[in-house]
Image 1 (tube, protein in one colour):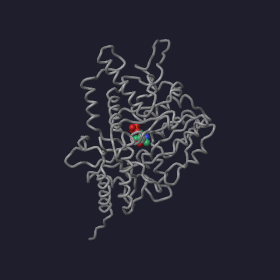
Image 2 (cartoon, helix red, strand yellow):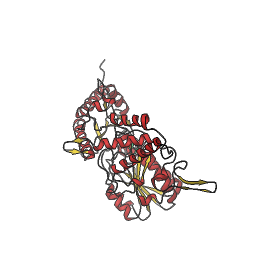
Image 3 (tube, protein in one colour):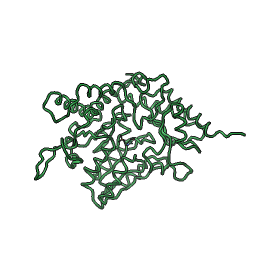
Image 4 (cartoon, protein in one colour):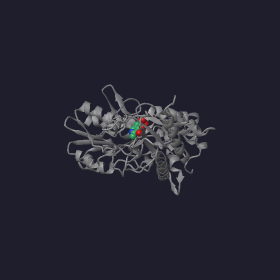
Length: 419
Ligand SMILES: Cc1ncc(COP(=O)(O)O)c(C=O)c1O
């Protein structure tokens, strides 16, 4: 399938007046293929997994485990240690509860940065509170990008965990995670990667980045909500405790004590989201099969997103009164995220006027209050912004629609009436 995907592939876009949906960093729209695959599971294959001896249940179990293999391969992970979660947030909380809460103690140090999405911020803040470990924030440059030297200097012998996002959901650019994680590994710390924005937009190989755990969500990559994955280094998985207990993850339960299964199976407490897993795998297969300018799969997605971002920034950055947050000053766009503020206009007002033009964007802090506080310090800026984020169904015309809608909204909101 050539990029951009045609509207006919995406039911929500397949309307007489095609909506300009630019909130894909929050959640992507879904192709018919993925929707149909989930519907087929419920219509023809639905049964509890890992629980029945009858054929329908065996088949559902095979599909669930095949989905685990597909998702693991998508990020180069070991299938035995690919845990299905509800999404990135649950994956990061799982690492906090199943590893950090057990292993950390007063005197230990956790390193993150103020650029993080709240999902990769609050779990570590909470773990510091519970264990007595100290939470350190790697310094940021004025434009919100990581100060690499400062980050490396912060990692020392007391550092036990370093958690970082691969791609910022506001700045839209990659953090130098390889360098940071290499230093963390040198001092023996565990490394956790929030890959919520990375896995959907570029090729990601868990072994290439030096992370012990990598979390991502299906719904940001054409898949269903309510499912995600956490790929964990098998050696680390052996040291982790159960996150939730109950049916499905036990080896033997008795009144004198219970033992649990090993590996990823220890994290499958309760009836798993099999339809979600099958839909997740369908989304991975779909992404593997797209093409753009001689490239295929995630290389094609990355190239397309990059091109869209360049086009959008060219059209938007010159609008009077615009302050670009993403891509940050001095950085070319790396993907399809454009975050901005318009002088004197609240992003919510702007977003409402854009919606009236059928252009859907996000306004607010985008779950990054500390980053917005940092970006607004030292200036008369609001602690919120407007974010437009594209995916592989957005056309270059959508970038133009965004720019036109912004110009129109700016004009409407700054117009002075003459009596
Ligand atoms: C960078 C980043 N991390 C984590 C998350 C949380 O993902 P989810 O809500 O799917 O758990 C998001 C979602 O916007 C994100 O952009």
